[in-house]
Image 1: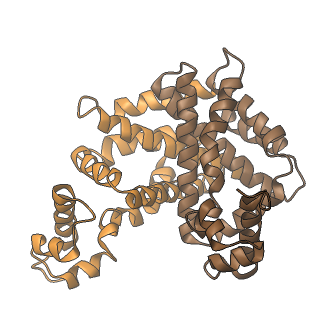
Image 2: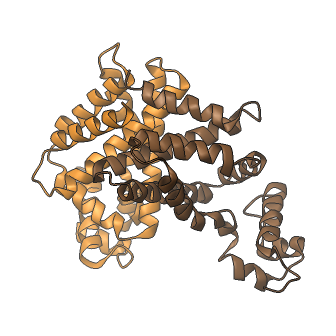
Length: 187
Length: 187
């Protein structure tokens, strides 16, 4: 990429989010996005296959992040211990300062049936990466599968409740409630 | 409906499943389905909006079934007790004799990306119905949400493992493994 466009992907993403919020996802076109970002449609299509995927560009990084988080959890932890450790890192490191962005993202996704279906696919990408992480730690197939679904549930429910709380609680505090709730359920 | 078509919906569904298996989902047309079933396309569109929805026609009944199952579980059960009770009924009553049908259904859904996304939506319909069932039993919002995801996970993972076992195990036996595995995640 030219040094005049050091951050074209982010500029396009920001422009797209603004337009989706201002005038609706269905009503926004790729040329409108590139005009707002001051870039060409050719640059757009070097970064994203279509306007929907602007909202899910980060998905490709998810499996690698999950793999690292799970490998970094202390050895010998139970499956639930691994979930707790990995999600605490997400809450206190990865997602710090991301609340407003995630809130914007969620409101756009919820506005459109097709985006909601695509979001469900993201959850299954997350669950599959987590399953592989558990297998890499030596868990049996059943524990890996169930642990993956429990982790994905804890993550998604925590994010939702955090965003619903509108900045009044930290993600870490909400996450602890959710994990305690899960443990209370299974006890 | 005329008395000459006492079971048009099922006949159309059976014909559609046969054709999807024989020649593929994408390659099958509505006229082919109606010809196989000996019915008209007009009858088809009285039952289903399109060929995809033939595979998900049962979805509309899911919320009512979940509501009944959860209301029938003994009073005073823990959330996990309700999940156990409701899924045991599913395994020993509702799904008896359905293994081959579910196997066929799964192989068609897995053959097509659009059907896989639609299947994920079915899972979220199931989770939402379960959440409402927990709320109706007086659970708090967090327990209801987490219980719904745990129940849906237990159900989906059990069905998958049951089908993978190719008729060698009962759904009830598989379900017990899965529920024990969920409880064991904490241990």
